[in-house]
Image (cartoon, rainbow, N blue to C red):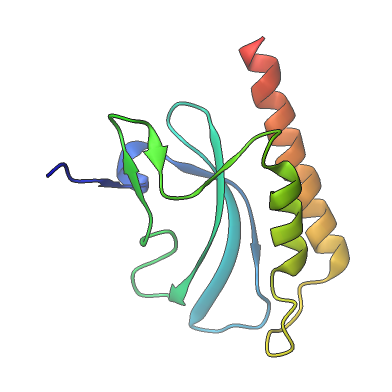
Length: 119
C-alpha cells in the first residue's frame, strides 16, 4: 500500500488563513494552500497547538491529489459558501464579515494569478 505524505513534506504553503478569534492553546483555521504543482486547495484545520495546523491532511505525490478541496473556478462558489459559514454557529466566536470578505478577495487574487501564469 502506497503511503501518503504530509502536506509540509511535499512543499505545500499557506496562501491565506482565517482563524476563529479568541482561542488560546487551540486553533480553528480556514485556509487556502498552494500545492507543489501550483494548484490551490482549501480546507479547515483545528486542534490544539501541539501537532500544528494541517497535520491531519495528506498528499499523494504520484497522483498530485491532496485530501483537501481543490480551489478553482468550478469550486469557487462552494468555497465562498464555506467561508461565510465558517464560525457562524451560535457556539463559535464569529469571524467579522469584513475579515471573511478580505479572505475571499485574497483567495480570488491567488486564483487569478495562477490562471495568468498558466496562459
